[in-house]
Length: 136
Image (cartoon, rainbow, N blue to C red; front, side, top):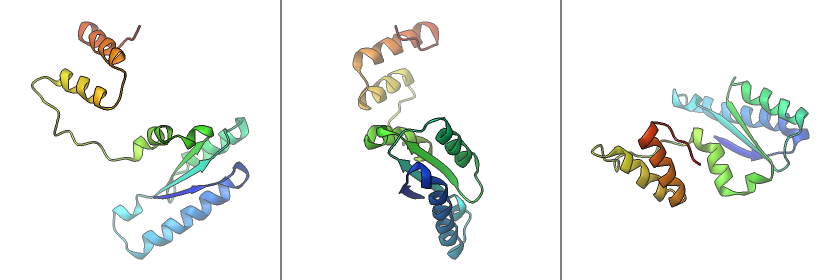
């Protein structure tokens, strides 16, 4: 994985350069995992319609490496970056989930993750009653 920063007018070249670097590194020590390559580019300004099209085209092209373009002021916030990178992060260990009461395990995990207690209670009540999560 290679993480870098760019501006909209240089993002295409930045992605190409990062991709070239990653493939060169992966080629030095071949293994099946070494070709699971990711280029992540942070851009501080939000995308307009033209830039959003560029972002979509870059992310759609998975040749050589998968690309993820994070844009806008939200990239300054750790939580926003973490949320955007969730698909790339390993799954959390589930050893603490009790199969005796899985709904309670979900409730505890949500609370431990810092979710609002009233919101968790409302979501869990809704799910227990209807099988769906609807928050008033």
